[in-house]
Length: 494
Image 1 (cartoon, rainbow, N blue to C red):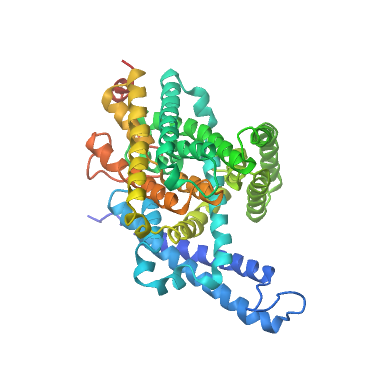
Image 2 (image 1 turned 90 degrees about the vertical axis):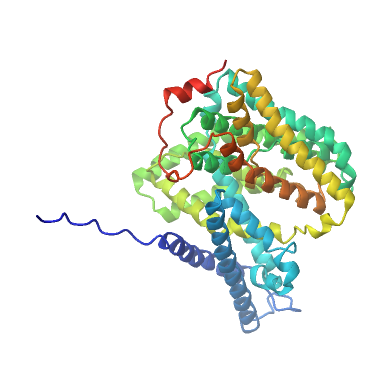
């Protein structure tokens, strides 16, 4: 009896990691080279003007580009290793990437071996690496905007509406009240109490929408009513949080809440015009590109132009470039199987593997925990911030959900999920640091808070017996199984 032919073995698992890294490194290497030669980086002590000839500039530029490429390769390799370790520990890979960035900074590796900084973030290449880190941040916010589904908010019912408001308002109020306790230790130099309080309230109420999506998927809750409700509430919280952050930054720029009124109104009007008029135009352009067979390269350039144009406009308004990038992402139609979605997915993949880890390293190089641990006042302020963040978001969400009629276990699970802050919180904190709303010590403490609140999500779900059973296969990229009638009944309001 003949044996059936065996199915050929698939490609080794390591190819799924190495090949994208090689492709990404080659692509970004070309980008870095173009930036370097275009900027005309001068010789040390030189003017870099018309009098600086190519023979003098060439070796210096080549050396700078080499340092940038080596740094990108080192960052990508360590971030990939950190992501794999985090997955082994039951955490989202991005938590490992964030932790890797922190460990490479002065809190650990750079503090023990100062020379390691030259490998991951060399002094001579800092200007270009800083540009690339900001590019990664803008592309990340562009991806977050493209994943935002406004239709979920329109379909949300009474329970979701109540929980969304409670999960945002309660931690925001607690954050504003706690601002009086930590203002002296955390506020940026010369910043008023009102913008600082608004910013701290916003930081306390943030939910990491992209990281939450991964947690929901990997916990087996993607099609469970709890997961759907958490994603919808997180989307609503993001809208409110971005508005609050824009207000805080506008107040900081204008000097008073009254002076910020014009900036906030201008930003709101710009967002309304972009979303109302921009969406039909982008969709029409996408359909035209499909009919005429526009190449992927042209589509990629169009996406980059859209993201960075709107980021530039909002930056000119004084509310930060991340808002424009988020708006640009909301304009792009995300329809699986289309050429535009394929280009966008590849762009996001390169960014998440290469440029976003570079942003984490740039953050890690500014975070020094030794400066905090030796200061009693900062430790007390940090404790207040962490307790306020966890109690406000977790307890506030759980109590609101229980009041709306959900069972206690599901209410606590919803609070645990929305308490995850992850990358979005770090983006917000970096914007606040750049705007002078908080100082470096506050940034360090709140980054640690963002990591802790995200790391605790998986174990807390397991403790509540809401995640998939131990040993179950990891969630695939495809849709999860539909909820059972028992699951749906469990989430029904009492």
